[in-house]
Length: 99
Image: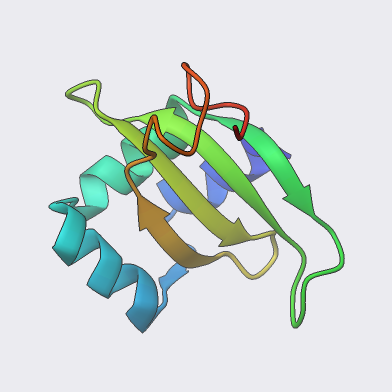
């Protein structure tokens, strides 16, 4: 699934929700960070029953190696739901598993 998501992002076939744009602005992320995070990322949580679309959480790193979490809906409608820098207070080292 991650390869299909990467393909959609590389082709520009995604949308960013207003919430995700606000989070990106607050966290100091740009679209290149988002795409880089997916390209260097892995799916760490699946949400197959979320409404209105199934989704997942990706743990990745930006081009500058900054940790980033991206929650997005699954293809064929890739919507970036939220983006944030994971906190060591809430995540174990490596940011793959919640505390």
